[in-house]
Image (cartoon, rainbow, N blue to C red; front, side):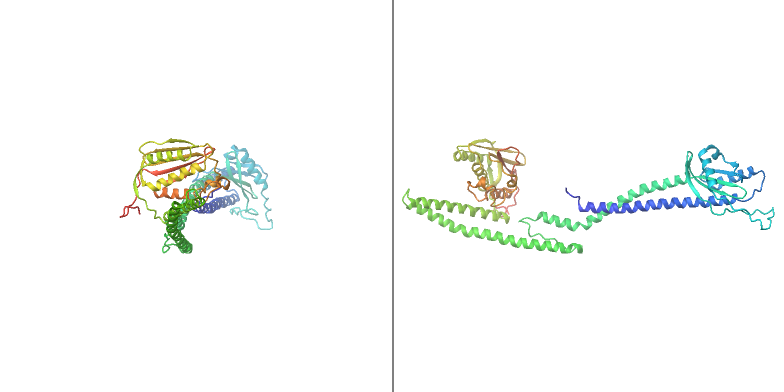
Length: 497
């Protein structure tokens, strides 16, 4: 499975790390804020419970607790209109006062009573001390700070605190709805801001990663343009980051070695072809002249005829190698003229019918198919394709030649009956000196240069030669595509540069 791009992984990883940090920070901050608000509320509840420890000043006692509840509502819930509940018992656990909220909520009443019962009983007063004057109201603090807990009832979530004093038992409950609203607002802020921050981090990481990987993109672009005609390309590294200087330097050195090696190999191939061309031409001429001088039908004539065939075969190989070396160097010269492809194809069909009378030839060639190209080289391409269609055909097989033209390209499709080409051979069919399955080709003459040279000639015409996908069993099809209008740059001699 193809992995996602390195740049995308950097952006996602950065967003993931930042997201984890932001979510963790948000969660910790939310809980810290919540605990701070609860601690502030507990401190206020403790102060109010301490106020309840003072002896009553005004009779009747119910009026005193009514005023006490009013003060609680004013202090704890004036700004936020937070409900406050109060339950007061005497020393015998009889209800002295209870607010309306306690009377309306049975569960809240039960929780307040339970918290009062769980609160430790204060120690008895020290009777050894002198009596305290009645006009002085000393507080009776609880033996230890009361415990505050949060409880859920049908009317909401409450923060409850209770304490026992020598003169009363008091439980106060404050609704947490205001705190919950504030925390919900903070949570919503986090839920909106964290994804926005993650998006900014991801975009920033994408931009930074793109900037960091720009030398790699440049390197990839140069690699994609490296062909036998582009080995002279180099990547400048004066403005490159230090981390990529060594990589680009190694790549430039590799291109230099490849260019030097290919130049030497191409020069050797061209020089060898040129050097062999002259002696082969002389040898071919001498053999032809000698054949005319020997006795017809003699054994010497037969041997000289065989030698002449081999010399002609070597001459053909030398011509192909010379053309391939020129194509590799980008110096294949094309003599451009208007070529009537319809006329050429009709002549080719007639030749095939003469050379392979045992094969059935079908053709669909419209009139007026014309292109700009090198006539001799295009003839060589068509002869190679039709020669292969004859050599690799089945006994009593068939050949089909189809041509059609549109506004942009001329396409010629040559199909023949044949054995199926293995998948491994199909991808290497245009390789030089590759002849595929030996069992399939051992009885067929050739050295494996014809298709390679044909494709180079077609590409020099800015076209292409392809092997069609194996859609049908028992047949092989090649498609030759030529541009409708070749826009070549001509040199002063009339040959394309």
